[in-house]
Length: 223
Image (cartoon, rainbow, N blue to C red; front, top):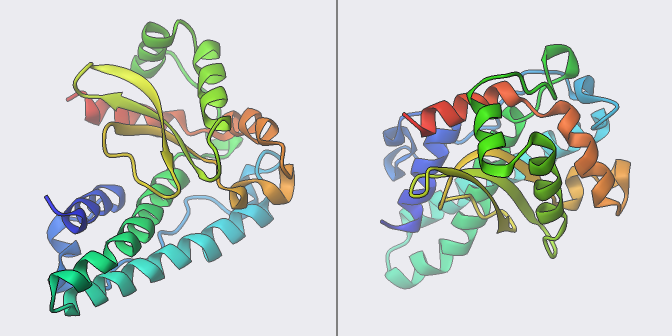
């Protein structure tokens, strides 16, 4: 499977669009997904200023870059040209996939953000990590340890049938596991509010994690 096909299929899952709509024949159709909440709805845990810049500027840039890269790929006439475009497809495609998942990964406190109710997700976390607190501690430690920019993930491993904590560099999408929860550790996700103190950002984000969405993803992964 080519990188372009992998990105297209992952983007289709992220945006709940049929894979065919992301084919080269229908290129340049990626758009910035709307948020389900206002930019300031996650305060004080994530500021409205960060959310607006992160969504309207950074994510929009990945959408623009992906559309441009796919258009160029479709027009490329040689393998050399297509190979040259692979990094742009991976970076911008991954940025679009990851952020589309990330926005759904968050929810205001008023809408249940931060609440992990009794149910299959809590049971699975406790079975695989010992406790919810132990899971959060391990997730934060692993994510904070990323050198440079990247993502920390709680992923479901279809081979081991376990929830596992993994990381990806830069905007690489998670392809080895089914993403359940993702945390953006790029500086644009937290620096305006938490400066260089990653630990404070990682501690705060659990107050607005959308565990209902995470449980839905787990249910789909374990069908």
